[in-house]
Length: 124
Image 1: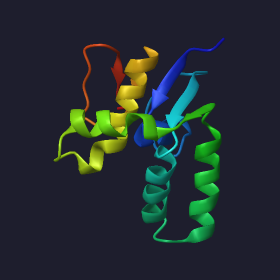
Image 2 (image 1 turned 45 degrees about the vertical axis):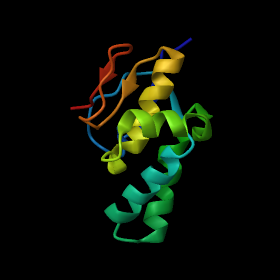
Image 3 (image 1 turned 90 degrees about the vertical axis):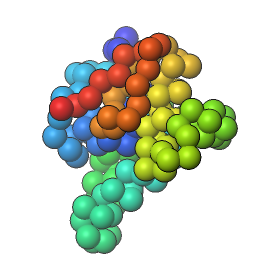
Image 4 (image 1 turned 30 degrees about the horizontal axis):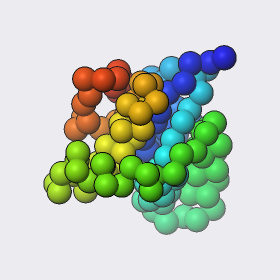
């Protein structure tokens, strides 16, 4: 069975090949359901609102996820741990909490999240 890794939006974009960076090869990718929205927002901005290009790349990226987890179970803990100033990094903080619950490493493009419980990998 391949090694598993939790990805936030940045990690997922790297794992799917939509952004440059290093991702574990042949890893089973796990992500929170709201990561799809963060990825979609990024791709829409990247393609300047071009719906067909955004949808295609979104489909390819989301297909890289092997298992989706609901974010609703982590909302309160994410907000407590991240603090009020972490608006742009909430996806990363909730992904870190999932990684800690599953005792798996996290692949993230965020420099804000750190953990003493699991490995945090950055793609660059």
